Image (cartoon, rainbow, N blue to C red; front, side):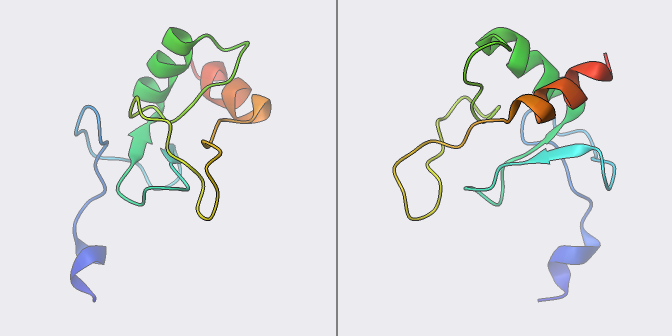
Length: 83
């Protein structure tokens, strides 16, 4: 419906309003959206050199698979670059 578009997008973790382009969308769980500061924190906690999963703290499996979604190194670099 059209109701969803009128509500501001908010970070799943800190509930701050998200900017249109600068947020991370979990491809597995539509409600998982994260601002860059929360994503950055999560990446640092998980260790940027290894596999970094959804900032929700869950290993959200990709649709149609049981493999958890993880950040690509390029995405990690982009998010950490804003620090």
